[in-house]
Image (cartoon, rainbow over all chains, first blue to last red; front, side, top):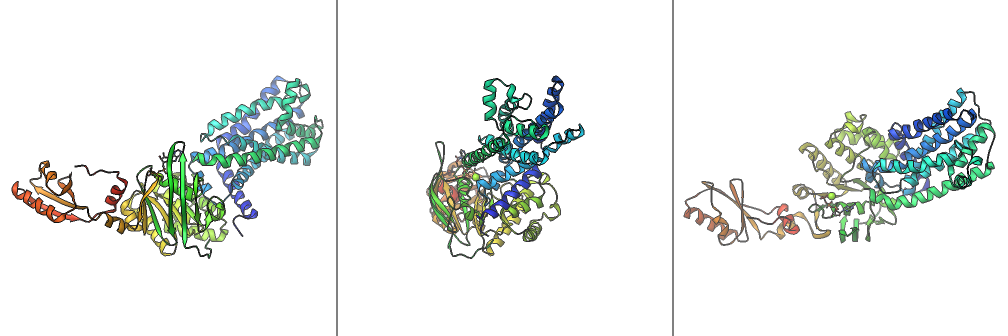
Length: 251
Length: 317
Ligand SMILES: Nc1ncnc2c1ncn2[C@@H]1O[C@H](COP(=O)(O)OP(=O)(O)OP(=O)(O)O)[C@@H](O)[C@H]1O
Ligand SMILES: [Mg+2]
C-alpha cells in the first residue's frame, strides 16, 4: 500500500496515539489538571452550595473532568516532544501533519473518555444512575473529541516550554467553567454570561450531561450535539493549519 | 522498503535556500548525491550543515529552491520522499520513557513495516549494535553512545535506501565510533546511499566517496577527498625538530617558508618548495650548531584542505 494512503496514515496515527498514551498517562499535568483540580473545585463548590442537588453536581463534575483532562494532554504533547528532542525524528517520519494531529488527538480523546469513569463512578456510589446512558456515552465521546481539538489549538504558539502552554490554557479553561453552566445553570447567568455561554463548547456538553443524568436541559439535544460537532471540526482544521506552520519553529 | 526504480540520483538539491530572520543559513546551494555514494558535508560550526540536512529530510521547508529524494520532491511529495530515508538528526533522542524495543517498534509502525518483519529487523539491529541485552530497559538509563546507537537502529529499521546522519559520532568513544562507521560501510556495500555531516576530517577521509565543504551557507568546494587534498598539494608541510630544542623564531624568516609554528618540541613548516626549504633548514642547523633530530615531509591532509577552503584557521606562526 502506498504510504500516502489514508488507511496507512490512519495506522500510523494510531501508533502515535499509542506512544502518547504510554508516555503521558502518568505525567503530572494529566492527573493534576485533569482529575485533582476538578475534584477540588467540585468539593469547594459542593460545600458552599448545600442547596444544589447531587445529580446536578455530579453532571457538573463529569463535564469538568472530561473538559480538563482532554485539554490537559493535547496542548503539551508537542512542546514536550520538542523539549525532549524527539520531535525532529518524529516529523522526519513519513506522516502528514494531519496524521500527527489525529494521533495526538486520539490519545487525548481516550484520556477524556477514560477519566469520565471517575465522576460517573462517584455518582454510582452515591446512587445516581444516568437516565440515558447511551446518549451520555455518545456525548462523552464527542465532547472528548471537541475538547482535545481545543487543546491542540491552544498548543500552536511555538513555545517549547510545556508550563507556558499550561498557563495559557488554564487562563482560558477556568473562566469557561463559570460561564458554561457547570456550577451555575445558564438560565441564572446575567445576559452577558449567557452570550458567552453560547460561545463555549463546554456549555453544550454540560447540557448533555444534565439531560442524561437528571433529565433537564437548556438547549434542544440536537443543538448540543451539532454545536460540539461544529466546534470540533473548526478547532481541528485550525489546529492542523497552525501546527503545520509552527512545527518547524520548535526544532 | 526497497523499491525498484531507476533514479540515478539519490538527492538532487537545486538552489536550496533558508534564512532565519536576517541570517542566511543556507545560501542557494545546488548539488547531487549519486545512488550508492557516501557523501560527506563538512564545514565549521554554523556553516549551515544541519539546516541543509533538515531541509533534505523534510523537517524544515526551504525558503527557496527545491530538493528531490529519488525523484520525489521533498516539499510536494514529502511522504514518498521520507519513506525512503532513514534519519539520524544532530540532537535527537529516542523516547526516554519507552524501552529500546518499544522505540524500535514505534518506528516500524510509523514507516509501515509489517510487525513480524519489524521484530526480526529490531533483533538483528540491536544485536549488531550491541544493545540486545538492554532491549527492554527504558532509554532513560542509556549512555550517550548507547542512545546514539539506538537512534541509528531506529533509522535503519525500515531498510532505507538513503540514510541521513548529522554528526553521528560526535562525542562518542572509539568503540562506539568504530561500531557505527563499520556499520555504515557495511550498509553502503549493501547499496545504501549515505549522506553525513561531520567535523571529523579523518572520518570523512576514510568513509566518503565525495565531500562538500560548506562555508557561511555556501558550498566552497565539492570533490573526492583525494582530489581535495591534491588541490592543495602545492603547499607541503615539513616537520622538524632540533636539539637543543629551544630554537628562536628566526626559522620562520628563512626564504621559501610560508609559515612555521611550534607544536610541542617540533616545528611545523609549510612551504611551496620542499627542496629548497629542506636545504635551508639544514643550513640553518649547521649555522646555529643544532642537531636535527627529526625531519620529515607530510602529505597534505583533508584537515588542511578543509582549513584552506573554509579559511577558518590561519597559518599562524
Ligand atoms: N532554528 C533556527 N533559528 C535561528 N537561526 C538558526 C536556526 N537554525 C540554524 N540557525 C542559524 O543558521 C546558521 C547555520 O546553522 P546550522 O545549525 O545549519 O550550522 P551547522 O553547520 O550545522 O553547525 P554545527 O557544526 O555547529 O552543527 C547558524 O548561523 C545558526 O545560528
Ligand atoms: Mg549542525
